[in-house]
Image (tube, rainbow, N blue to C red):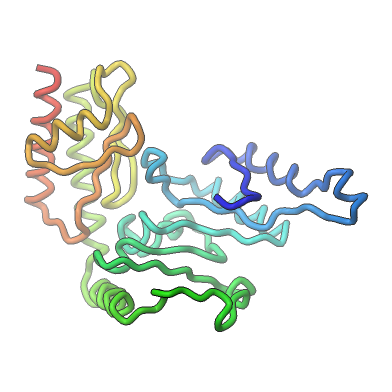
Length: 258
């Protein structure tokens, strides 16, 4: 992060309130020099991806929204991983009942073609003018065409219903496997088709090792930190493919405990 960011525990409302109060208090030496310190923005992922597939809580995000409003600051959301329908809604913040001032998108926005975008509303949308933020590849025709194609497909096809249905199927299947192998697997969490299953501290293996076991079964997964296995199937995955993935994952767990 650029200079000036401070960190607060995720989903901890009191810690966030305390940090914002501290930031909004100008140190004496700065005050003597005629400087004033204050909160500029709070930036959050609606669901932490690399942090272990941890969904935000509505109350935490509502607290963040309120603190920003009180401080004249911006609420900013990172939607790069959870956005573009992966949560079961178009944007992850829609799961939490808040509206950010700024949010970012990338990855799925281009359907595999590299692209990134920032969306803003209100006063935040008036910060940049033409030429203020130039980029060699910004707005290139290929990336923009890919982004428009993805947006059109999402708009004209009922992709979100599939994400929600297949997400429920995936959660139910993972929870059954976790109950069958309680010495290895713990909590299943996440939204839509971004799910994580925790690996117990005493399981005798890491998430990366289980990912390797799954690969031997023909299933591609990815770790989210040292103790969470992450499932991020395509948004157009079908019912039989989810069933097949669950069977392969269970086979990987069984090979570890047998």
